[in-house]
Length: 304
Image 1 (cartoon, rainbow, N blue to C red):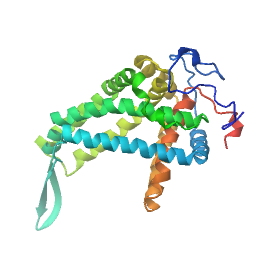
Image 2: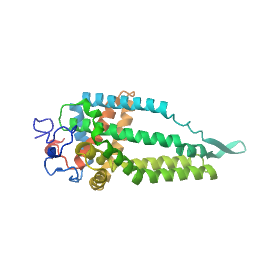
Image 3: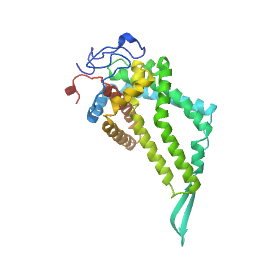
Image 4: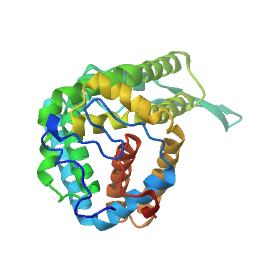
């Protein structure tokens, strides 16, 4: 049995969550709160995602376009309701000696104020809640394609039945991961703005922290998949996601580097390559979530 076979899919459509649809398959989940943490190879995820994408590239591209259009429309409406704060203008002061620039200082106070602007915080909360709904549909749509199901675009808008669980999970991940990083970044910007620092050092530190935050948050990506697919409770999804990814940290870093390379290649292809690169990258994430939670895609030797 391999990808695309008639009996390939052991699950029913994830659009409707029912207790009776969880079936044991190769050690896979039998209940919403039961998964099989699996060590996943970076090459396995990369190649399998590509094989699935090649056979479904049209649906993947259309699905991503719909996803982005909905996100853009939401951003347009949000801008009318809660306008974004003005872009921070970090004042740069150059230090010179005998007419030669030897250094400089950057006032990061504007960036600090933008980071803590009440409008920015409100926009972040609204965006997070909307994303909880939107990403649930995204996972169901791409997960269905990965399982060999007929592409159902209605799945992109099917996240309502687990919205509260997804929203609670977003809050939980933010409190454990996002909030500490946010407080550290605010502290750096505040101290840099009041004391002064070598030009750009504070911003570089904040940028590196945001990259690190992205890596840490990737450890909890499977939780979104479990909520979308199984209706797992938020606290269980958090715990199970950590169990599934703590042994796959190297794979996550490898996939992150591969994603960066794919994006660069897409840009070098006059930007047109991004039309292919972005859907493939999204499929990459979904396949990783499915594999590390114990789902199988045929025999291992069939994945080339």
